[in-house]
Amino acid sequence: MSGKRVIKPVNKYIYGHFIEHLGRCIYGGIYDENSPLSDERGFRRDVLESVKKIRVSILRWPGGNFASNYHWEDGIGPKASRPVRFDLAWQREESNRFGTDEFIEYCREIGAEPYICINMGTGTLDEALRWLEYCNGKGNTYYAQLRTKFGHSEPYDVKFWGIGNEMYGEWQIGHMKAEEYARKAREYAKWMKVFDPSIKTILVGCDDPTWNLEVLNTAGDIMDYISYHFYTGCEDYYGTVATVYLLKERLLGLKKLIDMSRARRKDIIKIALDEWNVWYRVVDNQLEEPYEFKDGIFVCGVLITLQKMSDIVPIANLAQLVNVLGAIHTEKSGLYLTPVYKAFELIVNHSGSMLVETHVESETYDVENVMFFNKTPFSLSNVPYLDASATISEDGKKLYVTVINYKKDEALRVPIKVEGVDKRIAKMYTLTGPDVHARNSFENPDVVSILEEAILVDENFNLTLRPSSCSVIEMNLV
Image (cartoon, rainbow, N blue to C red; front, side, top):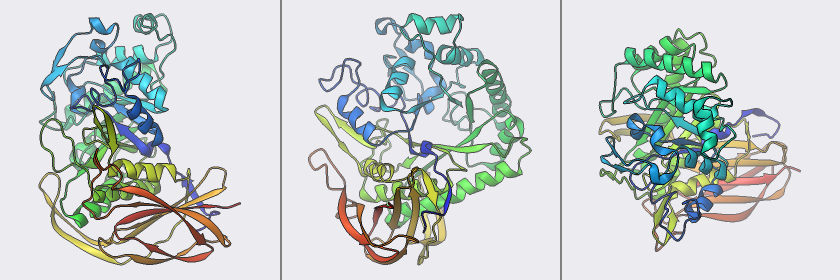
């Protein structure tokens, strides 16, 4: 690997997250007006601090399934006047005390780009246009002035707009066939861009190539992204980590469909992996997954895969940020950070903005008849035990080499060649835990943690990788 062989930029939006009005993600998670741990805005200060540490680059909201019966005007204006509604998606009351203005303020506080998913279930094109006007309108129109009336004179300039959520599924309020969705979504995207030509639209994609081609062929001249959702769900260790490569296969398959479609702008259409995570133990409406160390290793694998694919998949959103399948878990008196969070903490804070060419040689293994999230077994052949990526800082002064050992119980002695680097001391950060099923908890928050140590490197050096671990070697180049 060489710092001179820079291939392409790494899009920062691959480090995105997702919050939905579901369980304790928002209420009791990032937002808790009644907590002594919250600030005057209702934002949990400890959560806010933790979110800032992983530099969330883009934040998707309000859903998810919730988006398909959410009427945004319920969530603006004085909070005492906002109506309480019944949420059909998750069968609970929605107070509407966290709405558009609170979401934008949260994004601004953490430095994230806002990404809004509109209601295509019980909503209308007119409602979507009014929402866009409220967020981005600059003139004397009604909704631009309404935003000003509520204390926000400057436009929010929301760039990313999702045109519905999982509209292919019977679980989705207002779900529809591919032809109907593609036709309607094209109209939404077209007229929203008439109001604001600068926005980027994300249309719904899925595992069904027929659906995807219909959307691409019908709306490919107006869309910017096609979305894809991926949840792994294997109790088996190798079944979990191998799905990194299953995800890669599916993303490449979706890219092939883009290329073979009749879309006139297919060279511009990218993929938004705007929901992804581990989800297999919890089936109730709280969805508070007790994440294990192996789930953190899976997340590391996905993140370095996305680093290498960010020209194809420039947006990714972990589902979700807090409590619900959450990277962060809160209690009334505090919080703890899951192995999923620790994976983000490691990769986001120890990666550069430019991808460097890498070559990896590895033994492989096969995974057969492993039960996937939706109870469909899958098999994969020739899955590498070793994976790596390398990135360099924008100023060219730091090189980051990330190496994952997927072997469950065996350390790996790995020769590493880094062209043009003389002997020097580097730092190595390793995500590690006592075993693959280790969990952090409120009582024991650091069972899975990041180990920092100094190592000696030069152009050729050997590195011993702990079993089931991810390590980042961070070296100064000047």
